[in-house]
Amino acid sequence: MGYILTEEGKELVATVKEFCENEVKEQCKEFDMSGEFPENIVKMGAEMGLSAIEVPEQYGGVGIDAVTCAAICEEMAKADAGFYTTMSATGLALRPVLIAGSEEQKKWACDIVLNGGQAAFGLTEPMAGSDSSNTKTVAVKDDDGYVLNGRKCFITNGGIADFYVIFAMTNKSRGIRGISAFIVPKGTEGLSVGNHENKMGIRTSNTTDVVLEDVRLPHSALLGKEGMGFMIAMKTLDMSRAYVGAGAVGIAQRCIEEAVKYSKQRITFGSPISNHQAIQFMLADMDIKTETARAMVVQAVLRQEQGLSFAKESAIAKCYAGDIAVQVALDAIQILGGYGYSREYPVEKLLRDAKIFQIYEGTNQIQRSVIAKSVLKGM
Ligand SMILES: Cc1cc2nc3c(=O)[nH]c(=O)nc-3n(C[C@H](O)[C@H](O)[C@H](O)COP(=O)(O)OP(=O)(O)OC[C@H]3O[C@@H](n4cnc5c(N)ncnc54)[C@H](O)[C@@H]3O)c2cc1C
Image (tube, rainbow, N blue to C red; front, side, top):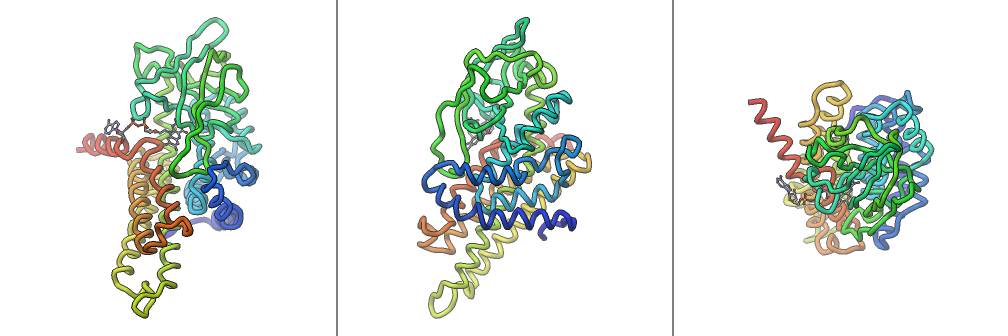
């Protein structure tokens, strides 16, 4: 199926693909081994505008359509899912500002991102992952503004962000309706970077704790109104999930390409393994799953762009694409046999990278809850 792209979209995706093939893929393979952050590659990606693909035209963005954005996400993740995660986490942090920010906040945040800056979305805490109602970070209001205290964990770009969107309780008695969202610029006194995660996959992305100790913010740091934080976070995640699905499709597509390449070269019993029907059927199933996931992504982003309801479709795209990326990566390893299990070949990394797509931005169990709620409501 592929993406049905405009001529402009095709050109843009081709440019991104070339950059990802030439600059990201091989270098990030080395950084995956060492666990170092690929600072220069990220800088180049940001200069190309890859973390700013969703900045609206009215705030200086290029105005890229939704299907092209999805295709760009796929190309980035196909080269390196950690690189994709870095770039897209900035978009994730920008969304709450675009959803609920004042004109001044929107211009400020978009300018940072357009100038190559990164951002971080700070919702998760040690005791509040799927269950945001357990948020312990507090924001206490006084005459001058708010004072924030708490600890966020697993924050992508936590150590490199130029600004953070932090979710904190302003009224504990109201549960999730007592959560508010704040913009915290880098360098704000009291904000520090905690533990760096040593991860199984997407090792080229930066994932840290973010510590808030008596962080004083002006009233103007609040996004929207007090108590709107949970709604802002959920709307943000609904919007970004389809693009997470696109990232997972990128991994699945790369697995197919690596498996096809290998299967044409590897000879067993006098014939390339691609001639064995068992291998062909595996490749066919890998392709069926990948094309179906891509179609789900396209449906979700188009519904979003056309102003239709999209929460269920985004959840399906993220959940299905995340699940099949893991399955397709396992199949790719199987096709490569013992070499698939070796770090000499790329497919073991693809499996490690694929796994996160079932976990972040809401686990696939949580996606199934979202989907089930919508299905039950419709009956
Ligand atoms: C590499 C990485 C990057 C991340 N980046 C960010 C980021 O930038 N910003 C951010 O805020 N967060 C980020 N996260 C956090 C991520 O979104 C959470 O890890 C995720 O939402 C799950 O939360 P948890 O880890 O606390 O698991 P838990 O919520 O404790 O869940 C544990 C298990 O129980 C299941 N479960 C929980 N509740 C239910 C339920 N009601 N029904 C069925 N099953 C349930 C879950 O699906 C899971 O399998 C990141 C995480 C990782 C690993």
